[in-house]
Image (tube, rainbow, N blue to C red; front, side, top):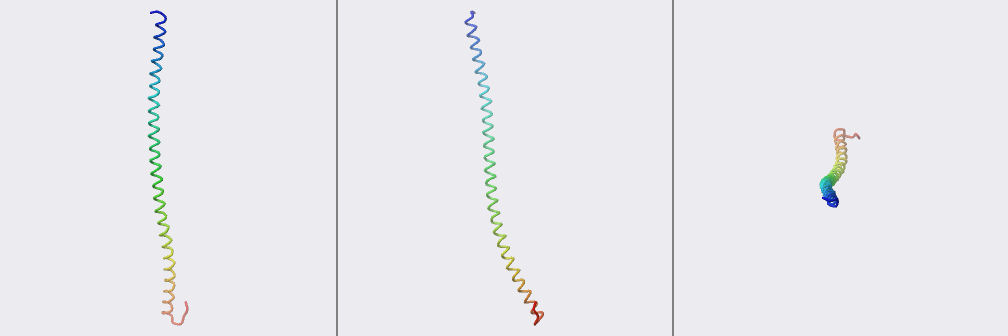
Length: 99
């Protein structure tokens, strides 16, 4: 073999090595991108679930707050009725007296 053939062989091997390393690098990048994409999608699904849960809990909490307000109003009304009934009982048990 003459010197020109060796140079061609060396350049060919370098090109082949570059292609192999380029393929390896692309494969690793592809795996990384696929994993990153999968993790991003998983995060987005979890975030959506969290958002839906928070919205559902906020609706339930609002409903409970309304119920509490209604119960407070009922409680105040019952306290007033209870007071009136105690006064009536006192008057019935103590004619002529004032509570």
